[in-house]
Image 1 (cartoon, rainbow, N blue to C red):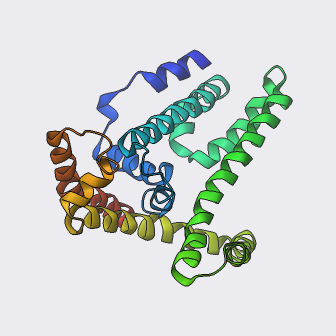
Image 2 (image 1 turned 30 degrees about the vertical axis):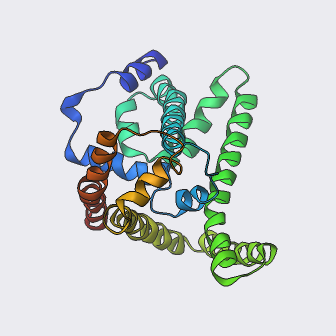
Length: 251
């Protein structure tokens, strides 16, 4: 096999392999990739200016997330096909983190300027981890500032200390990391997603939803499109989120 075979594998879909589990796995990945259910988008959304186009901004977030996911796939999958005798099995038997930390370190030494490219790749990975950490960091900091009137610097120190303690426990005890990972993935994030769609679909007034989507009437929205969106939020999204929740819970 070659790197070209990896690109074919990536971009030529085999719909016979698509099952219910595949769809649910994709929905679960969306939870992590877009930080749905973790409070990140809600917290960042509270900082959006009233004149910003919320619908356009949301579409841009989803689009760029998709683009970077495709770029990551183009970096990893062709490398696996170029170096492994049975690449399909390797991809099936390894998680994303295993591919990054176990497979890619074997790839870079075999490339021209592989040491430099590998150093750049993992430096970029560190930056990606830091930016993701900051987005998670902002949620509890904002909570302390807005709900308990804690000064922002003090709130930042408090959250930093707690995060360091939890991180140290995860580093020293793999069971702690496994427990927290399962808690977040199987319970907290899907539950947060359910609460969000139920609130927007059933507790938030239609006029308030229109006001938010149109940025206070600054942007004209198609009423039919809004009606379809509200229907999806009220009926389709809760079923999808609950399905992911129950699937991850009992898998």
